Length: 282
Image 1 (cartoon, rainbow, N blue to C red):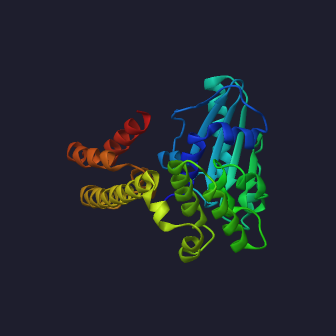
Image 2 (tube, rainbow, N blue to C red):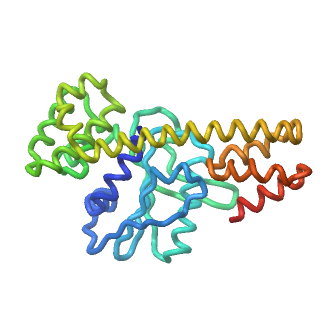
Image 3 (spheres, one colour):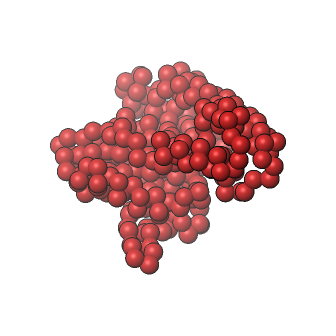
């Protein structure tokens, strides 16, 4: 289950609360931008773009620090494309959910010979729990905040959940909270404080579970398609340069199936490279 995807759901469900927290202003208008800017489809789940009346808030949630394209470079890339497309200032915040000593979680800029780009980094384990405990929209993040008494914090979180008057909202917030608490606490301890029955009654919880199962099935199908394509490539052309294999490995299931069909029309590596170039330019 994707923890950062749960955070994305929260940010898009409660955009005003996240804007207040991260921008420290009261937005007069706010809109969730359903825009496709990512060159890495696998990263799309953890990104949220919120547009206020005069600014875009770009939030990226992270459970791990390492990625194929470094976080700092992604921030530069997104910033340039957002400003070019929307022509307004952009505030970027990377939120690290799980405690780490990796220097990437303490890095707030991209720097090269000609360019320096700065962005904000928030480490949840350094945040004061008070503002999260008092806001249902941010409450699911509360278990990840700073504390010397983890069980006491989890007890406070459970009490805050119980005070939510609307039953459906209480169930959903409990479900989100239980999922994110899993980054820090054992399941048995979470269930002591947050009723598992209440969480499982949540429509959102069931939807997340279902999506997780579907994603697992899709990943299995994609791996099988990739394995089949690599076998075909080996039979067709023998040993292939690793740079070509890397390009094929990022394809989704539909692209891999298209490649499998196209291979029968190829007579050389040059044909393969041309086909890959065409796919990547579409």
